[in-house]
Amino acid sequence: MSRWKCGIEGCDAKFEDVESTIIHQTVEHERHECKVCGTIVPEGYFAIRHAFDEHTRAEYVRAYEADSTAVRTREDVKGEIEAQADLGNVVEQLRERGAL
Ligand SMILES: [Zn+2]
Ligand SMILES: [Zn+2]
Image (cartoon, rainbow, N blue to C red; front, side):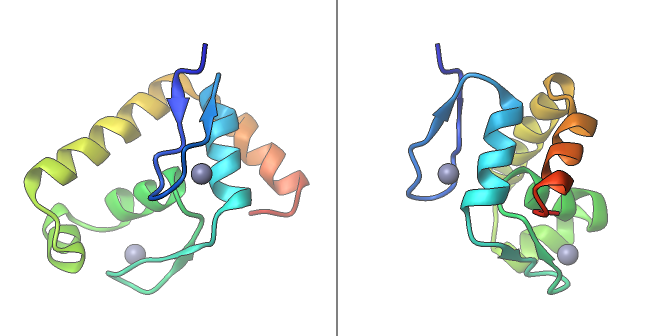
């Protein structure tokens, strides 16, 4: 059963666990340039984490022309990932592959 999908625009990749999803997003997709501060971050989860950990919601909404529903959706995804993923393990795997 694949419960997780990549979710990045135009990508239909599906995964059975959240760790594989994050690794896919980080390794297979182009990096994302933060529209608030210009930092280059991996696409997907790490881009969301950067946006909400480093910037305020107001900055995010302004830079991405997002509405509150879009913000809430991303915060929900972030929360769900953080509740279920072994992020330490993900980061370790990505470092081993030289992707972080
Ligand atoms: Zn993808
Ligand atoms: Zn930023």
